Image (cartoon, rainbow, N blue to C red):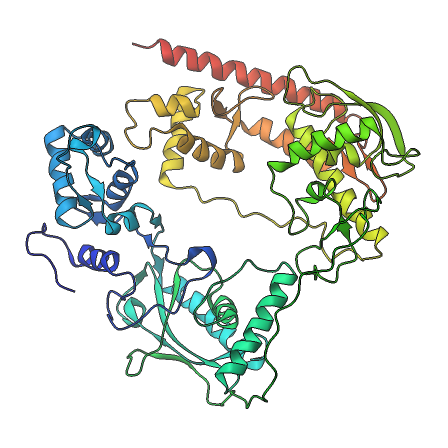
Length: 573
């Protein structure tokens, strides 16, 4: 790819980045090496080392400046704030980005865009790039070892994905033994179809794809090589952001990492034309409210929807939105709740037991259809312990958010368990086990933010967005995400029992408070739970409530000290 002579002097690494931005289908070191395909939502995404140099500044600066573009482009004031420079220096930097092909402009028309630099397609790629630190040689070797192990497993059962791995070569920077840092680990992979007849291979892959859609295991995957090819790539590299797979053209050079000596392609027997599956036959009764109405068959991910014995009518369909596939979206729940409550108040579905599902463990009470409205009008209904949470209700409209969240989670667990019990469908293995969520990585930005909170006493996302000494990312939402990362690591806490870190601010979480809270939560977690029979709120052990009150007192003391320090800091000239 030719390099323009009028562009600024840049290093070899900067030149490689520009080449990759200009032609995403070409590998920066091997122009003929085509990308094998993306994995899931990350197809076409670009990862860069934001700490590397670019035009005399960290690459993060250029990426963040390009992200400031609105429909009219980038204004000079945006460049001044992001670069923390005067206007002449900011205009010179914009001109350098224009010469590199990342921006065009400024515009010459009248109006707001007269001095706006607009993103080019190349600049848009960099603007939406994600940052990642380079991996060491040892970490790269460990990732490649996992890929090679996965390749061997694929070849032991090539019928699972209908493709097998012929060979894998190292290409790009990873093929250079003298290189110790890698932003990407590039591998040239040769995948071979399992069946020798392309028509039978395509039919087998389409059948596999439709079975996956029926079981809710995947979204629709559009892939030029077929669904099985996509599954094979996913089995090889997972959703790694570091490993990139490329096609294996003839004559490609690089160390051979894996080679299959067997020929795993088999002869395909001719078969009839593939008929796509028909839509599931609608059920005539709802599994929850038991009304004889046209209902939609539903199933948990991994189970067949077409053969599922569980069905829900239009009124009950939104209630299971979190646990099964094919439900209405979240926003439609509130309208469905109001409609269901109006229908139940006028004529209950069941005269005995719960007005919605008929369960005999029901009590009469007042329920609020919209807890967010100040003038919520209660509805008097006889409901079981599950249906109130499914309808988005609570026994009082002034319940705390954490209690409401646990209430709804417990009711959904009971809803799914009772549905499956009524249909005589066993619970999936491990359904009640929550997947451990990996904590977000703390970067230098988070560490500086933690120092800012410590020195200020109390800081909110809005405060940080208004600070003049922080020219980058003056958007309160951006700061709120970083504050949330610190909260997940138990480094800061919101001021007040139900404080809002967005506007009310956060303070440093003290060691004594953290230790006492961890000790109490290990003994008992307050709030409703599903006990396998009904939704209950277990009583805490003896002495727990008094120690929880002591924790609240300790929190208030630390809040007072932090607010006092914040006031003293604000009063300084």
